[in-house]
Amino acid sequence: MNIKKDDIVMIISGDDKGRKAKVLRVLPKEGRIMVEGVNMLKKHQKPKKEGEKGQIVAKEGLINACKAMIVCPKCGKATRINIKRNAIDSKVRKSRICKKCKEVF
Image (cartoon, rainbow, N blue to C red; front, side):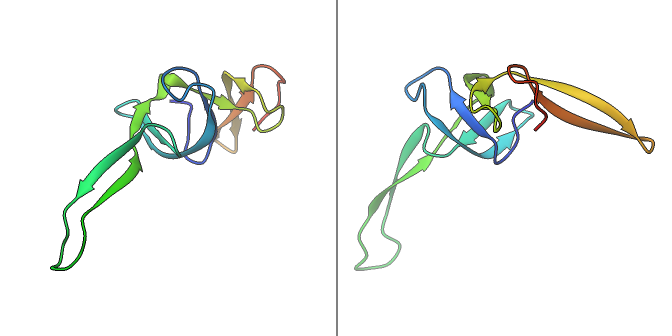
């Protein structure tokens, strides 16, 4: 999965199509991500103590990672990325490259 936490992504399908937001959480084994302000779910909470009121809490739900594209920080466009592996000091380092502007980020 090419999407990482704190990346800016654009939603490409669903109710929130076209929205740009930050990734809050990534679940690579499930192929799902949590994006800020996207797929809002409502949870009804009972009052915990006597005299307290119940409430409805809105929080972000998970979406499939295939419904989001990374936004390049250099050119600002939603793009696919290319992974380049560099062997430096017997360690393999990966760098992500924008397919549109060819910049490393």
